[in-house]
Length: 120
Image (cartoon, rainbow, N blue to C red; front, side, top):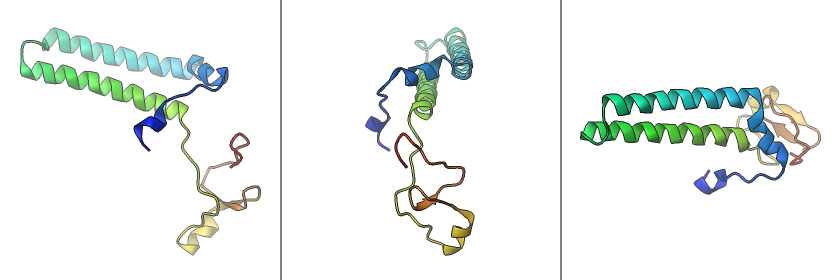
């Protein structure tokens, strides 16, 4: 997956409403409190402008915060993907462990269901 594929495009209001549920609000609150406390401690104890180590520590904290938020929103808004049509497992013994979708006429991944939105 390249970086540009993770750009979020809101097609309707339903996708924005995902953020205003108790789960995402709690998760974003925990992320923001932990990140802000770590950054505040970094500023108070290792002033970033005085030493090289303080600067590296501060840059790493900002980097980790951005990566955490990027991966959280990526997991929240970008789908996990799907198995290509006509896919069959390489090992024929694995067929007995997979379910067969009658709508797609193909095998589906464990815990997967047919999606009406993308018709897969």
